[in-house]
Image 1: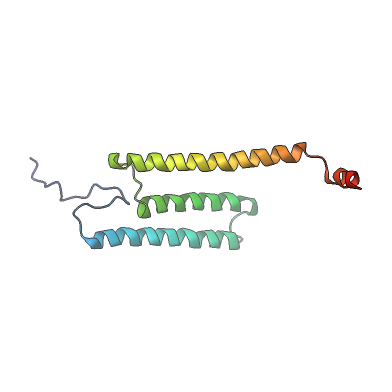
Image 2: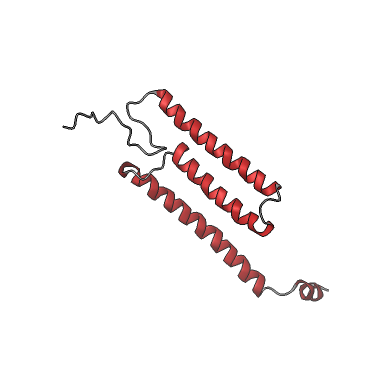
Length: 129
């Protein structure tokens, strides 16, 4: 033994629930998540409303901040971490993302093909007369 007790240092991921810890430690994790989420929201509004970011780069900056905020919510509020006990949660999240992507991309694909294959509106109106 090295003289260190296993409980002396905390080896949990940022959003992982602390086992046997105090309620105050859990509140600190939620408050840190709230602070980060609020900061990312304020940064998004600031980028959208200021002229400091090049105009065409604003959507990319907002997308990056949105992805960062998704990460904050997953880790600090939903407690999705890379630990072995969270494998089922991570797989369920990945499956949900896959289903949403299939629905969104499939809908856009179908609407694009419908638009391409439909008769132009002026010709449809002439046929109805």
